Image (cartoon, rainbow, N blue to C red):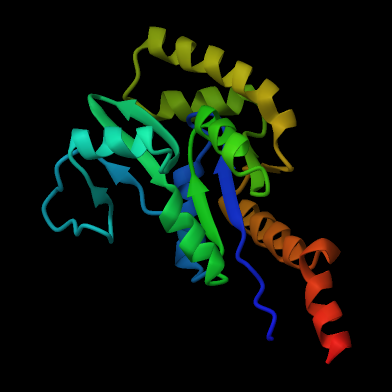
Length: 204
């Protein structure tokens, strides 16, 4: 029987404004082996979006059924629409030996940890909170009150860093990508992931 190494579920999260989306886009451009998880959503498809490629488009009833049947690793509601990560899609990808990356908010990551503790949890951190504030202000889309509210949430999220396996500082996007790729490579070389393969070879 040939040994097939399972893929890794990589959960990348951190405070709002830290640059999770930017880092994931940069990883994509590198042609990295990480497969991006496709979310289920109740929002209507936008022009050019394809079901099963960009999102799994669901009615609210279907989505609620997925919640009841525990078919979602995590889910949240934003601006009247629900978004979540389908368990089956993630598990099937991992069984095929593919590494799956999930880019989500801190609370979503903690939901995933309860259901999928074997995942690899990476906390993307700003160089410091002043820099995080500059990035949020730089977006030019937030009111002063909302900025302060986001900063307050960010401080409490930074305290949840202890729930993660690794922390990657996002001082420069390319350096952050280097660190994430190095962590994934190191995880694939862990003895507890590979010992079964060598035991199988020894029996042959």
